[in-house]
Length: 248
Image (cartoon, rainbow, N blue to C red; front, side, top):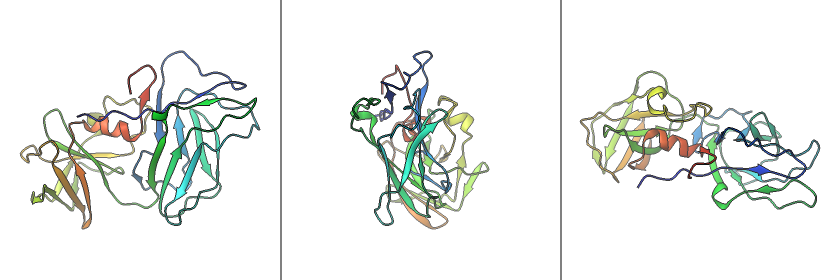
């Protein structure tokens, strides 16, 4: 079954100006869920057709971040962003893994109303450390098995790999790196191409539901189950890409 794309939408009403109801604009978050190598000063962005609260209005902390190293909340602020809103930490991110959560905030008397449907809330992870991880496995229309990686890679081949399918070693030591022009052709151009897609050769059979284990230069393994979703759809889901007026 093709996984549905999570919905991410936010509408700020009340004293704040209403969202522009003209041409539909996409919603997405950045970094994508599972991203590695995130910059130490990078904000966490919620992009969409929103207008923010009045200047100096105390915004509710509906975006929270947990440092998985010590389990503590990361201090920061939800601020106006050119294309939506962003969480900016008070200090640069430390080296490690984090989880950020978009929650349904409590309404404030005489303040802007923030309405979030249950499907629009949730958590995403990111890591400031470098290193590739396999996030998802899907397939091209031609039937090749493809993997969505946690960061960008250069070149047209990714070497130093080992791949097993349902416990059987494939004997592969490299995978083909697809151009985003190919796998992300149907994804809105505003979404950053901050992941990579690599594919197994067409003569390596990969069945739906197969378990794929991957090592990169001995690091791993990363275990994923093959779905019938395209690489572009899996990437979009990791960014929670949704366009208003479309089904989630």
